[in-house]
Amino acid sequence: MNTNINPKSLELIADLSNAFGPSGFEDAVFDVAKKHCGDMAQVTDDCLRNIYIRPNKPAKGLPIFMLDAHCDEVGFMVHSIRPNGTLRFVSLGGWNMDSLPSSKVLVRNAEGRYLPGLIASKPVHFKTAAERSQGAAPAISDYIIDVGASSAEEAVEVFKIRIGEPIVSDVQFQYDEEHDVMIGKGFDCRIGCAALIEAMHRLQDEELDVDLVGVLSSQEEVGERGVKVAVNQVRPQIAICFEGCPADDTFTEPYAIQTALKKGPMIRFMDKSIICNPRYQRYALDLAEKQGLAIQSSVREGGGNNGAMVSTALDGIPVIVVGVPVRYIHSHYGITSYYDFEATVQLAVAIVKSMNEEIIKSF
Image 1 (tube, rainbow, N blue to C red):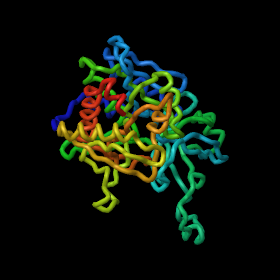
Image 2 (image 1 turned 30 degrees about the vertical axis):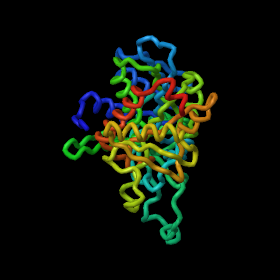
Image 3 (image 1 turned 135 degrees about the vertical axis):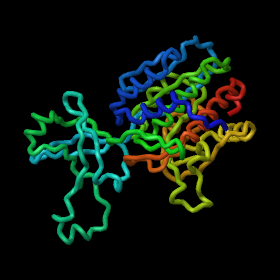
Image 4 (image 1 turned 90 degrees about the horizontal axis):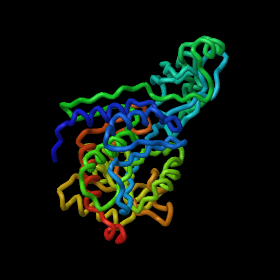
């Protein structure tokens, strides 16, 4: 497989990773999508901040193939301001709690500025012996965010903090080209968003037997909310849901590794939310083998994704989940690779180019 780095693709990935977009506040991702779709497509959104990418060439009345990737990231929201100026906060999505202490975040204030802050807990010097010996994992209520204010009045009047404002990790995308390692925030699922946009670029001049629509759906991390609306807007006959899926190659016994870095995209037979259409699943695996494309398959006992909402929408929609492996999702930093991004794009392009109404009906 050709793994030459396309600078435009790398810029797309970086812009998406760096975008401020926790669940419910995905506006900045819309701006990135408009920037990178250029003259290829019309980019619109709805009140939930679902982003619709429709190719400029007219639809032919063919079966609609929806490509979906959720555009939100796990984040936080200001709950209240304590008398000493520190912030109580709640989570937007399910965090790995072990990753929170001593990490930098950005807090949006009333003026729309992003203020630097730290997630902090009581210093060990001030903990009692009982507190130091506690073995239970901390709760989010055990932490505060400190932006440097010394009173609630200063936090409101000087820092312009207000309740209900969103918070994300303060992390900038980095790429180590020598070792093909991308480090950044929000790869769940911004790397999937990048793969979706790149696939649509490569398909724009192809004569397809389907009408293609891309959706960057909102609020997946808080219950797959956006895609429930988007699927009714698009009304597809078939779909792919892209994901930034949890890599398991740094902590799993070798025989059980199913989502390793630099082994290609993972397609998922099941998780606790979905059994992906088995005929469509096998079709994708067979196509990848025939064309010599890198691919992995997995069976998951936990997790969930937009595919569950898509598969049971309308009269039922055949869907598969195509995941780019990402180490340490739902924490401040993730690790992924350009190789897996490129392999994911190639698989999606091959599936869309091969699809027609007869094949869809066979699923």
